Length: 362
Image 1 (cartoon, rainbow, N blue to C red):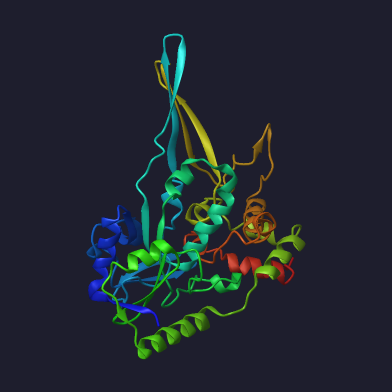
Image 2 (cartoon, helix red, strand yellow):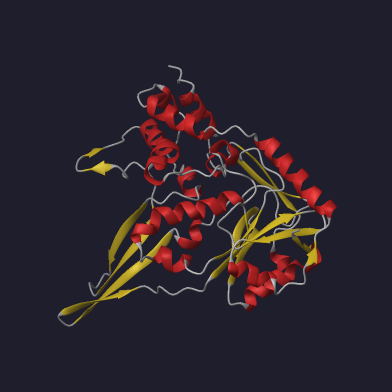
């Protein structure tokens, strides 16, 4: 039997994490959107808010019944470990020498509360992509992370994790997992650290009725998402249709704004910027997010490798759904749907991947 924590005692979980020295991060309502941000008490959680999404549309609405509402939220965990802009080191002229000083690599350990299974998967994908680059600022921020994942109680229209063989119920890679019910949470630990936190909580033994409610909820979410795994078909289709006119047509709609890559929880493209002070006495090297959709990203000594916008979209979607599998053994997409939600012209990755798998029309 699983343990049960009433919603009235959720604050004790956050309190335990804070007392254990974690900086607690969870979903908050900020500027009309649900985002991951620092928490000091459960009253700051986006309780009672629901999210409605569609291609090119995202709206947070009051009236939801959940503490951790539907949808993954507008921000994924990527910015916690790889900020949009970070100074890597500074240099200061001193006499006849130039002294380099690396930016701080010590950060408070994070406890990520309320993360959805798709974003938990995104963290694991980032780990695989970054493992050969250690040590790095990513690893310094990632070290000691405590994850409290929440199984999806429902799904928004842009969610498609099951199309990539994933599940709305977390299976591994977490410290604690919660299943939110009407009156409270079923809890299960996934690590010794998670089990230790459970021992600090006033837990109850779950009842058969609660177990049944959780099972019904899982079945409902899975039915809404569908159980048709399209990962292999999409990967093959994108390779087979590399010369298709689909990409030219898509390029006529795509704005090459990069919104999809900036919203994606696994994109890692970045640029380095070296800046020299006006007096020539100091300099900084900064790492900032970049995008394969930007015109200058593929510039190579006098020409662009991917000059047309359709070529850039083809490159991005093919990497996410096909080439990433060759590199790392899994798709680089988790089905969170943010790229669909935040595309200003409503381009739907699912539609384009399925179109390629079916043999793109001229």
